Image (cartoon, rainbow over all chains, first blue to last red; front, side):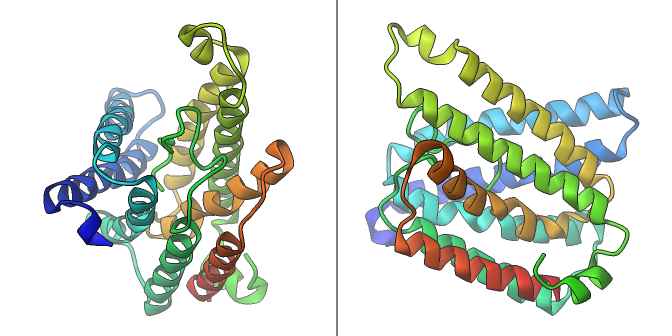
Length: 133
Length: 124
């Protein structure tokens, strides 16, 4: 499947997915601050900024690969969530959580790897949804 | 969660916040389908494709969901995101069937079944 896409755009895709996964990290940091405090607003702005930058990047990346290819790679974001949880917040991870995540990832990839159609791609038909996954 | 008895030990004390997170994913899945409903219609101008009650409401819901997720993440570990965020891959097709009369492909159903197995393993 990778042969469909040049290495450059494959890396660009994954860098943008990596960026997008950081929205969850910023969101958690924001959630820990006092609501509407300066730190809260700052972290929340970062969440919105990441979401916005990802939306821009996603559209560029999609010019260079099929929607199906991009969608099949997109759920890797959930694994980043696991990694940031451990690295940034020192959260506890069990082997069952890792295996479970891998199976969920596989399930998503099976589901989206076929011809994409329907509500999963939103208004502009590019699947540029606001959530990370 | 399908594994009630075992799930309780893992998610103990966090049920309320996990529920908030799931609601956040659910409402943004609904918003996603609202965008699709409007995208299926034809509009007089490009501007009206964006500035109509359905699309504006959808974006308001997305905005609200960012706050709900943040509130939930205050207490729920980020490492739970692999099991909660992907629920959109189940919600969106199901809402698509209900709101848009879309069909769910066999491939997608198979994917959902595998996801559910993953959720059970994760929650054990």
